[in-house]
Image (cartoon, helix red, strand yellow):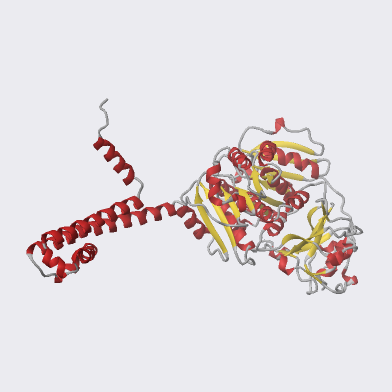
Length: 624
């Protein structure tokens, strides 16, 4: 191999210098300009001393040469001998090349810098912001909810880190979410699995971190890897709380181990299953849960109330002008929803209050008067066996059937109808349910008619996992249209609960007038957003969905207030209190299918006139 010469070394050094980018190029142009100016000035002094003397000798020639290098038009008025003018022309021509090169270098450098900024690879400098790791359809719901939650904040920021183009993310958010209000949305391009990329969104100074499930096969593995990446990071001071969701219950222990004590990992499948089963029992529950989780409506807040120290929970129910107490969070972190009315509120307890905004929660003076004549006594209703038709099959079906067995009366019957081989043979045994199977195509009208749908009290329509989200929802809509037409012909004999993948399809599905729609992805997104704002709400939601504690029920209004008479919400609260329940609101039957609330009214004015019909429902927290 030939040995490198001095020329090779100099050329290599020059190439390395040039490769350093715009600053190096500007430096070389500055040196070239200085060399040109000095050479021309010196040559002018030597070749045309008389002309140089007339223009200030060597210092003056340096200045005149510099002006002609930077501004070629300066030489237009030059006079003198031929050699002098020739030197000025050389200076001008050299300046043209140098200035044009400088403009090109600056333009290229600015374009490169703008391109680098558009790539989203610079580190943000924020404090108490919310970090979203990953990108999926959930991000639009989450960002919209955070924007709504931060309306009362003077300054808030949401930072998103995903392996996508920064500009594409920003354009998609503006198109789907719209105005961001007082919230700044900052997008950065990077892989959440890499610790070095996590630094781009300053997780160490964040208030909370949310890990979103990507729309890829085996998404739970990705979530667990991101949780591990967060766990491997060296936190400078406090560690922000982390929230995430897994879709396979089997992955929940691994995800919680990866996230550590600072993470709240929820089981998305389990929540969806519980909502489907409980909505089967009482239509409208899904909409109530959506309103409780949606920042645009009413939410749960936790706050200490020194004025209530020593009073009972029952007395606290009528203590608020704005807001409805739903439970207590004890000093040791224990959450009690709908505790016994005689439970005494301690100084270190926090009251869990349902309100439109934490700024609107207000204690009142004297409790509003109760209209005793409007309070009624509930008629006992014995539990009787029922028949349920489960249309379709997916991975949630076995758990739905298993959980349904815990709620129904002994002797109840469930028939699974799906276009596949009988999957029920491996299920059971069940204590209360008798499970059967019928092969049928849910989108085919003759198949549905052969099932004798009118003989069932409840119909549950599951999303078909064998198709993509949009196609599965389209099949569900066709099934719902057939069922609604059959129900109208039969005289409204059964309730319909349907699983929908995309919330955008819910308004379209309203024409089918199904009793309830469970949009599990949106509910999970809403829950994650609530937990990112207050991690202690995890215990509240876990208790609400646990059949062992108090749950949300929609009960006949006639069990609480005399039908068609004028009362108020304060009287409704008192009627529920006497039954050991907490009244959160009501649902009007006449508005069951009217968006956006679908008849649900939470935390209404306590003294405004209220008239409920017998078919309306009261929303309560109760043991059963």
